[in-house]
Length: 242
Ligand SMILES: O=C(O)COP(=O)(O)O
Ligand SMILES: [Mg+2]
Image 1 (cartoon, protein in one colour):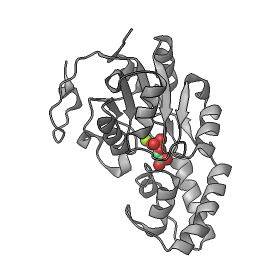
Image 2 (tube, helix red, strand yellow):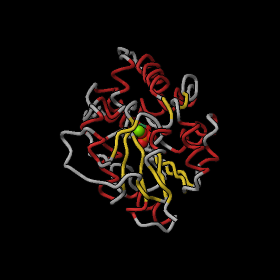
Image 3 (cartoon, rainbow, N blue to C red):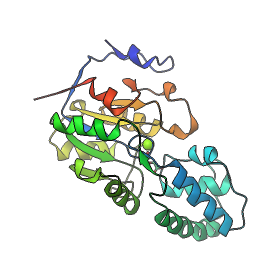
């Protein structure tokens, strides 16, 4: 088998040996472990309501997920992926959003099918497991606890844990050093271009799931080593390096 598994016409041809031999597995949170979009959108609309601004569809706000809470608020306020809102409006809106999200963090948020089982399989197989998310730590940790996933990871890096977040490679290289692993001995499983870019820049392998957010873009456009339908499917393509 090789990377044709990705059916990825736009990505450069890249051949990997399957099963992929790694020792570290890093897993993204929003759009990979947990379906957080409804609660993120609910909170964004509560914020817009408080600001007397028109609400937006869940699908639109879903496409704003990927680069952390601050970027999500900027995108919601401007209706644009690269929009910069008025500084005073943003300063007012951000704490309102954070309060609403803290209140509604796990109202509708659930692990995707195959997540609990897939993480369990990977843990049993002896992989070193890490979670890397662009979500702020104040939200990451309670969500992982509420969904029973917290104890599965030996290290959890949030969007504000280090000076830079994905698509910067820093969180991935930090995890590799933490586990004393070479980048090619590590795999990131994610859902978006932030994951694919960060993994390539770090020299790590990357799988992407079909069901996540990817800032509203087609996951098949991503430069990744495999596209998988679930973490259970991912586990079948991986072998544990000694
Ligand atoms: O917080 C976000 O916008 C995305 O977070 P993720 O890195 O877990 O997908
Ligand atoms: Mg994600």
